[in-house]
Length: 154
Image 1 (cartoon, rainbow, N blue to C red):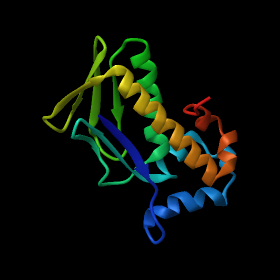
Image 2: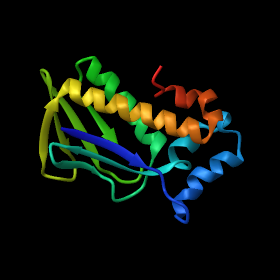
Image 3: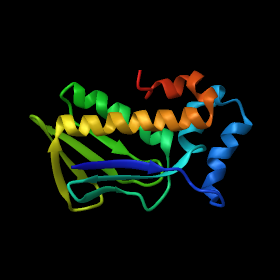
Image 4: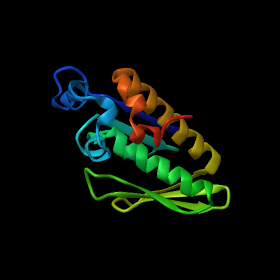
């Protein structure tokens, strides 16, 4: 079983500024670098068969994670191994194809978990849909930003 979710920061959190400041500029024109490093901090959590792959304890930038997931999805679809990296720390989550199974390991932790490839793909796609929906709902101009098209559900 896979649980993959994210939560934007609430009012009063310093990370809330990473969302509010995006509305003070033209969201359609925010550069990829700024979207990946400056805006839309969130807590993301990925649990696979009881193993906390992404803990949800710290904040990361949602667009950076979404673009990394899109890249991982593309590679998995081609039958290739992939990885998810994080700007905020040096951990790498490795995704290794083993037929219809994907073995997930971490560069920082000793756990190893395996999951059906289709289940993982579905969880990633659903996460990307939710991220796209929440981001464009919060700042509608992001729907016109080519960086966001990179992980849109269309």
